Amino acid sequence: MAAPFTATFNQARILFGPGTLNAVAAEIEALGAARALVLSTPFQRADAEALARRLGNRASGVFSGAAMHTPVEVTAQAIESYRASGADCVVALGGGSTIGLGKAIALRTDCPQIVVATTYAGSEVTPILGQTENGLKTTLRDAGVLPEVVIYDPDLTLGLPVAMSVTSGLNAIAHAVEALYARDRNPVTSMQAVEGMRALRDALPAIVADPGDAAARGEALYGSWLCGTVLGTVGMSLHHKLCHTLGGSFDTPHAETHAILIPHTAAYNEAAATDELRPAAALFGGTLGAGLWRFAKRLGAPLALKDLGLSEADLDRAAGIAAQNPYWNPRPVERGAIRALLQDAWAGTAPA
Image 1 (tube, helix red, strand yellow):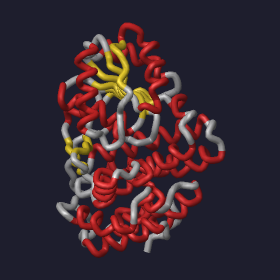
Image 2 (image 1 turned 60 degrees about the horizontal axis):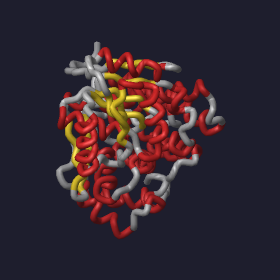
Image 3 (image 1 turned 135 degrees about the horizontal axis):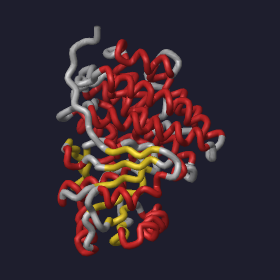
Image 4 (image 1 turned 90 degrees about the vertical axis):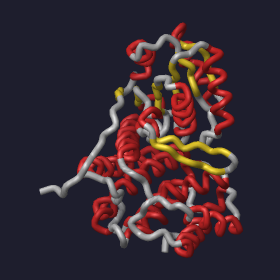
């Protein structure tokens, strides 16, 4: 018999499969909207403009200023463009930066959102928004920022650079690891987490070997959907607190920070959550922290925070910020132990 649990599941419309990009116009209409502002990062501006042309009079324009960690000043600029264009919904094309901007606009305007996911970030299926202001990143959970429609078209990920594919996939795996020991976990989220990790474990090496492997791209996108779903359903712990600290206060890149830290945060919690993490450990060779580090190294992922521009002198301050108002964690969050964890992650050595 399963242990007692309480669960609340987020509702969103999911379209998964090759060619689903063609459904964007119909989904705008189904939401009762008329014109969408298409959002992207500067890097994906050309793709956003192509989507706007495809939408024709369903598009009100393009805003391509989305940035990492969702700075509030960028959100203010985007809202100005949204209102000036006469839009009544947004279409976010891209990964976590663009999705975060769409959520920030929705929080302030209550507009409906459609996400066309092109990475493995997973935030498109969460009611979570992280925003940065004055060098500090804060997060909120609000049903109003959950996108109404998410489109997963594996064809759009065929051109995702291998390095970005790897770090984005490891970012997704990090969501699933923390979901397994979350206080509010339940049997469904645990199954989703393990299956999501399994899919990404199998898909990422295949993508590294052949970036044009359509089947592997589809499997990775499927895994990222599952990992993102559990991120949006249960609470997160030490790993995400550290990533928010480094990203918001030291401007480290989001996916790369997750990729480097997850072996170390998994190792930190492994003894305190052995039973919960056992299925994940089995996927990566029996010991989760060390197994994830070997997996990341095999993929050619970044392993050292120092390679992201973080100085060794920053580690004391980072540990102090992370230890203040910590998220719940299965092992007590102790500043000295966090400082030691960060030292290993900074140097790029295998987790202690």
